[in-house]
Image 1 (spheres, rainbow, N blue to C red):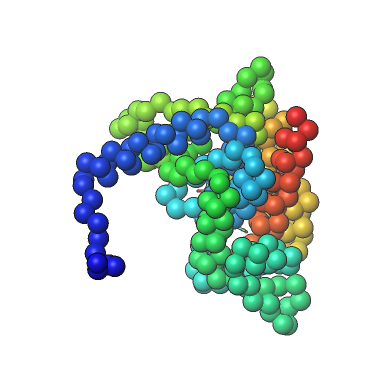
Image 2 (image 1 turned 135 degrees about the vertical axis):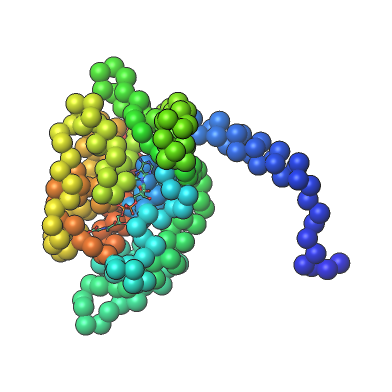
Length: 266
Ligand code: 48H
């Protein structure tokens, strides 16, 4: 038999089984332990860690592709920097990290390779992913108890409500992690509901300080709402870091650890 001869699939079977598999899986995604909003580097590592710990973890990403701002380095140059010890986390996932001899503590990565490995690691950990899924609102019961998020299909949202008026749907979870980078979407939604102060957005660039502050300030900012990655800088008004991704990885790992401690106490 020719090892490269394609098996003759049928059109109706392809359509039927895509629909069947999607809705069978979707039924399980309506209730999770943790919803991570945003599939950039911080969200991906956080998702991967939580799912490896055994939590039912759902990653929601508004874009078609996962990876957020990690596909490229700065200025469309295809290299990114990573501070130690974040390289150890990526190396454990099979990402080659090249030390820079003249800059102590700095390594370089090829962003597409690193992003691809992070995505694969999230899937391999058992996490579930809904892409093209935009978080628009929150589920808030009993005067502010966060119970999950409200989402819609991104393309329907992009068309605008005059063209496609589709009501959003709700996904429940015990914890929501805001990993939406500059936009800090979940925390901004808490602000819109008068449950959190105004989100200032990140401050001016100061790499050494920003990376340390993002990791240190990764935390539960509101009951059942954790913040990780660049969203931490946005929420605190702390400095930005440009194409330095180490703190995104370290913050994602810290967020997962904090969520684990919270959920284990229940
Ligand atoms: C669903 C959403 C929504 C929504 C946004 O920007 P990201 O890569 O975030 P981080 O924090 O993991 O990494 C930040 C890094 O990429 C970066 O930009 C750095 C280090 N900049 C420094 C500087 O000085 O500028 O990913 C966030 C993800 C994206 O994929 C968005 O599409 C997604 O969140 N997202 N997903 N619903 N409402 N809003």
